[in-house]
Each structure stands twice: as C-alpha cells, then as structure tokens.
Length: 203
Image (tube, rainbow, N blue to C red; front, side, top):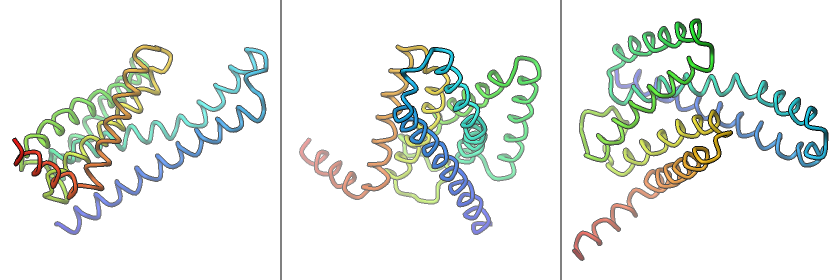
C-alpha cells in the first residue's frame, strides 16, 4: 500500500511538473515573440488576435493544471479510496456547472474548491497536525509544500483575474510570497529549523 501510494504521489508530481513546464515555455516564448515581432506596434485587432491565439494554445494546459490541483490538494486530507470518490464528485459537479454555466464557471468551481481545501491543509500543517498525508514528517517541509500548492492555485486564479488590476496585483504578490517562502521551507528545512531554535532560545 505504501509503495502504491508513493507511486501515485510520484506520478502526480511528474504530471504537475510537466504541465507547469509546458505553461512556462509557452509564456516565455510568447513574450519573446511579442517583442521580436513588435506585436505591440500593430493595430489593436492584430494584438487581440495574437492574444486570443496564445490563450487558445495555453488553455488546455491550464485546464490540466486545474484538474491536477483538484486531485493533489485533497490527497493530503483523504485516504486514496475517499480521494477517488471526492475527485469523481468534484469532476461531476464541475461537469454539471460547465453544462449549465459554461467552462469558465466549471473550472472556477474546481479552483475555489481546491483553494478552500488547501487553506485547511495549510492551517493543519501550520498547527503540526498528524492527520495530513505527507511523505515526510518534517514540519517545515510540510508547511513549505502547503505554501507552494497554495501559490499554484492562486497563480491560476491570477490568470483568470489578470484584467482586474487591483485584484491581479494582490494575487500576484500573495502567490510570489507563498511560493518563495514555500520553496525556502522545502529546500532549506534544516536551516529554517535551526534559525527557529536560535530565535526561540533568545526569547
């Protein structure tokens, strides 16, 4: 059972990394092409056509990322059997929402459900709860992983709300802070723990 769970986690990690990598390549390539082809100097209709084309290219990978997050987040709280049921129920709810209100609403449902669950995971990780399903028992790595996943969800939400300037900036900086802090906790867990002990002793 442990090997199967580890394999399941590994596949999710690989799939998420691949999708994020593809999204990054598309975004970076689009920015370079935008500059080299001087898209900003073209007529508004040409700029809109370019933007719509790039949105169409990246859209399937954003959808894939949202669905992966819908699986990755609840697996921290639920055993594998219940995870499959929850994921099936979430996808069914998203499918019905898409039929009734469109793709945009359906994907937002998955995102907000993932955001709510990740907030619970983050609070539990911060409290040092033992009920969470992580590969490691290290407190700082658990907290860091929770922050990174929160940042990923907010990153996708930021893509949805990039036209709302104030909300976009808020989401961008929260995303940046969450991911950077999460990475520091994950990759420098021992150093962070040592710093925490030194600060605790001084107090």
